[in-house]
Length: 55
Image (cartoon, rainbow, N blue to C red):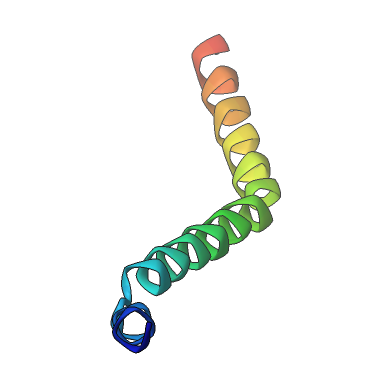
């Protein structure tokens, strides 16, 4: 039983998976937070392009 508990305590693959999951979550949150700014910039850019093409 002690051997099983020691091997379980040394196993770090679960911790690594959790860390990668947290990193992915933080990146996703940052992307969602930046989305309104990106949307506004893209909308402005496409409007100016459409205006220039219409001339």
